[in-house]
Structure formats: structure tokens, C-alpha cells
Image (cartoon, rainbow, N blue to C red; front, side, top):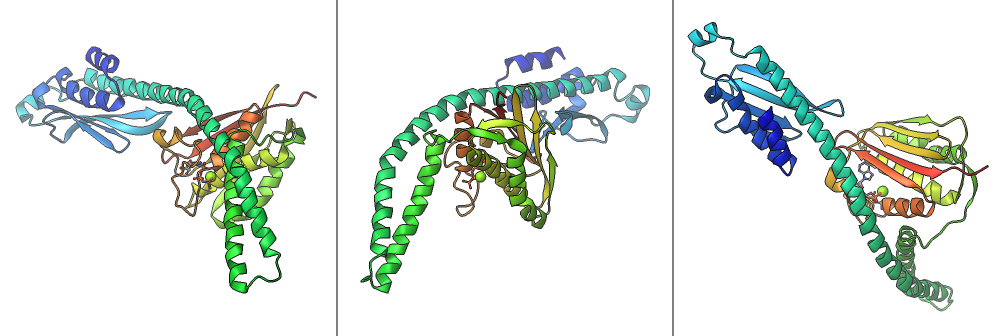
Length: 347
Ligand SMILES: Nc1ncnc2c1ncn2[C@@H]1O[C@H](COP(=O)(O)OP(=O)(O)OP(=O)(O)O)[C@@H](O)[C@H]1O
Ligand SMILES: [Mg+2]
């Protein structure tokens, strides 16, 4: 255990820890040369040097957030029957040791995840504000020319002397300009240049409107929609259209993350000062790498026709301008939870 602790303090990443721990474990067992170790974690396998599998085996699960994510296994090979009769193949203390090393690894992984999420959040705030400035500049410069293209295209479309072919071409210009204007609008929201209008709103009514929009789509796609709204009927001062867009974007992402169906929970919880809107799915989940990028404009893992990567950038901009907070929890294969926290209206 002392050597395991030493590895953990010295190592930089989880990979290095698993590799070194697998290698050091045999030296702590009664027959070091005949002992091998194997660690499974997610899709990775770590083996001690000269690994040999055998029928004599001990194992213990590696749990993360109380769910099994891996296994620690010890094997003892080529024991003569004489030796194995005279001695226990595994000592009682050795089983305790496997369990205790597996527990230490579990604690370490939990701490590692928390630290990563914290680092990602700090990095994020900085990077997003720089990108926000860039986006603000771009939207400022492009709004006017795009507005002109659209305006003149619509003017020409009104002309009576236009040939059908030309009309068709101008329609294409209008369509492309409308698309570009839509993107600019989303970028403006991300850069918080599209400040909404605050009004007193009843959150549950707003959430019910979103449910109404998605009920039949969920049913068609084999998704069970669960609703738990706080009975206190929270009131917030906010732009209703924008908050609705936040919830819609989160719900669309959740549905897209469950191509084979699943469960979608939409919940509101109120305390003295704040309200939390939670959108939780049982879909594909996200890796730490993806999680670090989700609020960046144009970051998407979806096909070209399926996503532009602006949904969460818009969510981010809106929540920032409403002085709210966003928390995200997700693991690959375990689904995702988005929590939006907004201040309650002072009644
Ligand atoms: N509920 C979720 N489950 C799994 N991955 C998610 C979820 N929500 C977001 N993501 C990941 O975050 C990325 C960015 O999401 P975002 O909503 O900003 O863009 P998008 O959905 O790809 O495109 P758009 O929203 O513009 O149509 C997604 O491509 C996906 O990889
Ligand atoms: Mg989206």
C-alpha cells in the first residue's frame, strides 16, 4: 500500500498510475515471480510485466460514483500441487489488500474527475470571453452587409420584369442571406449583444409550453418524457423567448443523444433565492474532452446537416446575460445532465 501511495503522489495522469500500480502489485504477494496483475478501466487494459493469466485468481471492482467502471485482478501461475496444498494460494490479507488497492484507485479516479471538471470550468470562462469578443466584432461587421444583401434581393424579387430563371436565382440569394442572418443572430446571442427583455414569468408555464412542443416527438422516438415541476411555481424576471430557447436547445440535444430511445427528465427545483431547471437524458454521454468544448461556437460532433454547434453557445450567452449559472455532468455511455440556475424574482 505504501508503494501504491508513492506512485499516486508522483504520477501525472491516470494512465501512468494504472501502468505503475499493475507493475508493482506482484511484489507485495507471497510469490512475486508467479504473480501477475491486470487492471481494466473503461476500454483500457493495464498488465504487469510478464503477465500470465491463470485459474488462481482474485479480483475487486473499481467503482466510480458507486458504479463499476473497472476491475483489479491478481493471478498466481504454475504453483506445484505440493506447494498449493501446504499453503493457501492467496492469503487472507492478500484479499484485503486487493480490495483496499481497488478502493484507493476508485477514490483517486473520483478526485481526478472533480479536478478535471474544475480546471475545465476555469479555462472555459477565460477562453469563452475572448471568443465572445471575437464573435461580437464579426457580428458587428457582417450584420449590415448581410442586411443589405437581403434587402436588395427582396427588392429585386418585387420587380415585375424579372424572368423566371432570374427570379429563381434571386430566391437562392435571399435564402442564403436569411441563413447567414440566422447564424449571425445566434453568434450575437452568444456574445451577449442580443440582450433580451426582462419580464416577470412563471417558469412552470414556460416549461409546459416546451413539453407541449416535444411530447409527440419523444413518443415517436421511444423516449419516455418525465416531468417533475416544483409546485411552488417559481417566478423569474427574464426574457421568455430566450429562456424557452435555452430549454428547447437542451431538450433537442438530449433527444439527439438518445437515437435508440431512453428517458428524458425535465425538472424544476426552487429554493429561497434560485430556481434550477434540469434536463437529464440517458443517452450517449460525453467524454471529458468533448465536455471542455461544448460551449464553444461551432463545436459539434454531429453530421453537417444535423448540427452547427451553436445550440449551447446560445444557451451560454443567454444564461450569462440573465446572471445565471450552468452545470453539466456527463460520462460516456451514462447520459448527461444540464442544470440551469437562475435567480428568483424578488416578489
Ligand atoms: N445531451 C447531450 N448528450 C451528449 N452530447 C451532447 C449533449 N448536449 C450536447 N452534446 C455535445 O455538445 C456538442 C455541442 O452541442 P450544441 O448544442 O452546441 O451543438 P449541436 O447540437 O452539435 O448543433 P446545433 O445545436 O447547432 O444544432 C454536440 O455536438 C454534442 O457533441
Ligand atoms: Mg444542439
